[in-house]
Length: 155
Figure 1 (cartoon, helix red, strand yellow):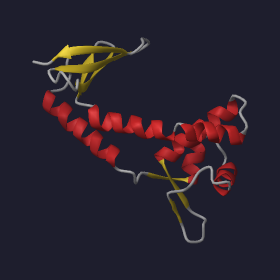
Figure 2 (spheres, rainbow, N blue to C red):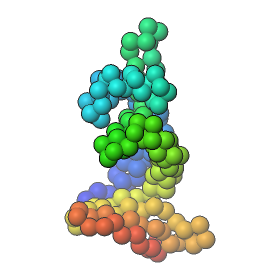
Figure 3 (tube, one colour):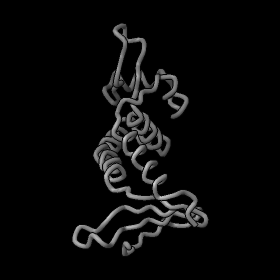
């Protein structure tokens, strides 16, 4: 049940991969505050404590810009705080996963080969097995169901 042509999928995937290479998506402190529910005052405090860092800051220090990665980090810290962790412990737990976030980004950027619309969801082709290039790993993602991983022989 493909809704788009293979050429359209390839174009979309190439565009997504190109976007993911860019690290210059920046958000202001107000945007980050609204998106995460963390007050600007708290964000400035976390910055003073070196828990977070802006990607850019004006010379007078009044205008801060943060990356999406930092926004995700702030959200994760906030989620740990909401479940009872201290700020110091929440930051430590979040830092432990910094490299995991980078690895997930790399996985999608390097392995996403194709996307197909299926009934109630999508099928993601994550590329060939290293020792069997004719067999690809596919993730089947459907609403309200666990993700399934399958192997498919390519034509």
